[in-house]
Length: 516
Image (tube, rainbow, N blue to C red):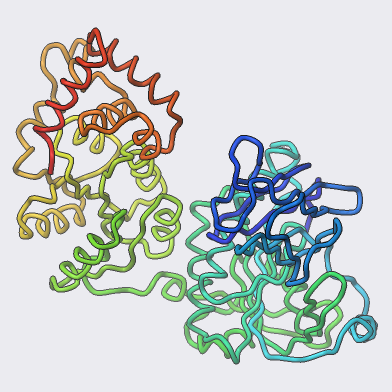
């Protein structure tokens, strides 16, 4: 396993996001002066700072009102962070992570003597998982160290939820590998298998190729100056099996103990036998069959719902679950979660509300279409304007229905799209087809009216029509007020409007004819 060319560290935030650290990171509530802005109670405007030093990353409290703690101890002076430290800022906890050096090559007995001096030993049976980037050194040579490091960061960010959302605990990031475990007294085989499936499904989305190794055995736990340490013969076995996977040209490798403990006998193909360095004997290895790695097969049509309102999502899920032959496999509210759940469930149909931020939704549609050949997109929205219909279909959606359509028509649309067909709400089908085929001006490359606006400008135009001021538009779209003002000027130019009053009037007339 190759080590990254530069030291790297990151913060695992309270909302599940990952923040990658550079030379300096100022943390607080105030925008403009902080690198990491957290809008949480009890956090000061300028709360803490993390600096890269020759000895590691140093955390300093910069005079916050409610203080900073590390591992539940008040921070009274600047301190060097270690992998796994929990930093509490006000009432929010975040975790510091950094790549650790590889495990020592000393014998197990020598390693146990060292750890005994550092903390009391305890043992537990665990499933051990190692996922390791293949050919990272070659990636560095091909792309350069900075671009390769960015891909490694994305890889860690994408794979981490696959493990932690299924009960796994990431013990360490060792070079370009992730080392995680599940204690058998606290987890189930189903959790490990689901994590394995999600990790395997993520391959199609990952910028880097990687190998997965799973083993089961007895683990020694202790605390050292580096945090929680896992050691013992089975830990060594898991790490050294990664080389065996490479030699056997196997991307997902299970030891015989893993197969037996996960109850996968008869569902794995033999990969071969091999000695393991430093451990007496010859060991059998296996690769899981396709039905193990494929998400649970459900009868009927698998659906993923993407809706910002949890109330509407609950109602739609209840409606569809009562429809024979349909199964809601999951629900999501925003883009990153949607991409992960698509990889996990491979749904037949992703039902998306175009919502206010249509620009982000159109980009999401394009990503899903590019990344999955088995998932089709159906838009279920209150936006009836043909400009939105055209843009959604051009982005890759196969269907577009309205929330005011009869339930029977929505069900018909889902079934049609699931088979790869196209479906348009009967309320908008004729004008939408005219828009798609285009009139004389369209054929000459000249768009007129709101159709001439960009996706973002159309978002702004719609919200102006709903009577929202610039500040509310900026908040709704996640952009600055100045950017909204720029869009307003561009809209006036494209629509040949002379004043803000004319813009407001036209936008209101346009919106009133297209409300839900």
